[in-house]
Structure formats: C-alpha cells, structure tokens
Image (tube, rainbow, N blue to C red; front, side, top):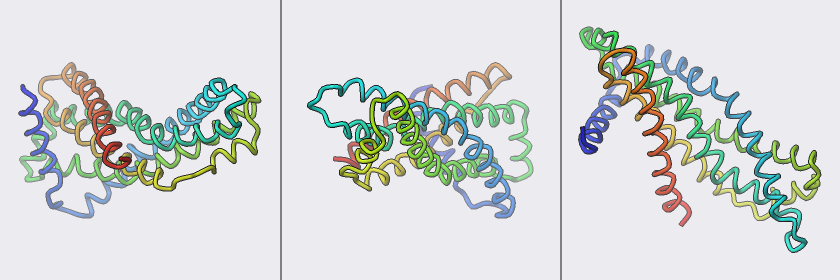
Amino acid sequence: MNLLEHIGKYTLLVKRSFSRPESHKVYYKRLVTEMELLGINSTGIVAIISFFMGAVITIQTAYNTESPLFPAYLIGLAARDAIILEFSSTIVALILAGKVGSNIASEIGTMRVTEQIDALEIMGVNSAAYLILPKIMALIILAPFLSMLSMVVGVIGGWIAGTTVGVVTTPDYIYGIQYVFIPYYIVYSLIKSVVFAFIITTVSSYHGYYTRGGALEVGRSSTLAVVHSSVVILLFNLILTQLLLS
C-alpha cells in the first residue's frame, strides 16, 4: 500500500471520528474513562523520566561550562530552556507514543480481529467515532497538563541534582531559571503537546482500526503505530518550531 493511500484512509477515518455522536452521555462516560487510562495513568512515568532528565541536563551543562568565563546561573538557564522548549513537549510525546500509542493500537486492533467493531457497525453505531473520538479528546485535554508537570518536575530534578552534586548553588540555579524568562516558550510547548497528542491518538487508532488477521497482526500494528507516530511527531516538531519560533 503506497503512502498516498495510507494518507487518504487516515484522513477519511479522522473525518468519520469527528462525526456527530449518537449519545452524548455515552461519549462523556467514555471520555472520562479514556482520560484516566491515557492521561492520568501516564503521570507516573512522565514525572519519573522528567525528574531524571532534568537532573542529567543540569549536571551535563555544569560539566560543560566549568570555564570561569561562564557565569554559574547559566546552568539553570540552560536547563530551563532545554526542558521547556524541547523535552517537556517532544520527548514526553515520544514517551507517550510508546506507552499510549501501542495501547490504543492493540486495543482497537484486538476489537477488529475479534469482530467487535463489525458488531458495532451492524448495530448502527459509528465505530470510528465511538472508539477513537474519546481517545483523541482525552489526550488532547490532558497533554498540556502532562507537559506542565514535566516542566515543573524537570526543573526540580535539575535543582536537586545540581545542589546535591555541588555543581551549582540554589541561588544561582533559581536566578538562572528566572533570567530573561520568555513566557511564550511555555505557550509554544503547550501548542506542540496538543498537536502531538492528536498525532499519537489518530495514527495509533488508524493502525489498530485497519488491522487484519490475528494476534500476530495486532502486535505488528502496535509496533507500526509507535514507529509511525514517532516519525510524524519529529516531522511536525520541525515544522512547528519553524512556524512558532521563527
């Protein structure tokens, strides 16, 4: 199957997913469930990875700026910008693509191969909207909160690691965090997190929805969902960076 055919099927599936719900009450219940499964259950891994990445960024920056020509507050400044501009949006999205994306693709793929989706269609239910739309909305709603959580935990992790190892003092680190702070950077990161959330859910749902075969194909669809989501995220990261920061 060529690339254009994939893009066409993906576009049509997304269009079907955003059709008018048959029952708003049912969709609301599914939305709440998906918010817990996709977003809230991901806070732990996001917080842990953000903490250690903030620590690593701070220590590496300190060891690469040991020259007396570099002021001490530069460590906090570099950690802040690296975490806000790139890590808390792009890297967290890649993490979610592996955790959430594989889960979505395997769930929908299993429903496809066990003919549960066919049963929904026979009952007159728009299976694409019923299965995919709550997932899209759930991750779009919670992605900015996960991104902000990553920013806060990453900065705290950098502070704890830097002061514990002794590469930076608390006043210097805090001054670097505050130095020439540009609030738009947070807006930029949140915009990217929303776009990446849409990519993860729709690409993963596409691979799961069009799974054919048995358990082996479900596993293959899950793998493809993670790979393709990650590639598209990196592509749109480049595009959004050029559009929003140029």
